[in-house]
Image (cartoon, rainbow over the protein chains, first blue to last red):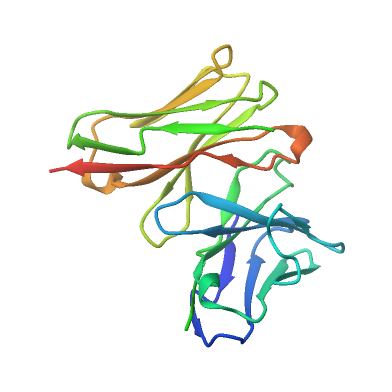
Length: 118
Length: 113
């Protein structure tokens, strides 16, 4: 089945630094990937839709200059949290679907990245 | 836009009993309804899904029912086991939103031994 790989799984960084999270579709091409943020005991919050070869689409309230998304190839999307602050600490998860199956095929998730900003 | 409500937020059942989680949606154009299971600190994993042309789907101990008229769908887990303990999320999507998933708030299922 479709596999989505996300790295790193955990990262601790100092306030003011930037952190890059990678999301790869291992056995399929993903023209679109989705980036979610999840707070403890809460649902998944869609941050942005990453589109290969074009600009990402950000959800309302998500700062695009804060959360930089690059989808340079059909198998890789990256999320960079710039000038991270403690309030950016969260669980970030990427997902993608294998559109070879259908555009309505299930979403497959990466393992998530636990970001802690000190 | 679409809104998905999920109930209950927490459900505690005795091992071996059945568990039912319910979701309602607002947009009648939604046509795909997946259920995901998320264990603590891990990624959501699809456990079952249903499309609007079907009223019920079953996979071993798990089943999903869909009532398009009432705009609600439910997850049924029979003969619950300790490993069923997790948070379960329902979601809804439709074609003209690029099948973007709209998520329910989640249900924490606790299986009591």
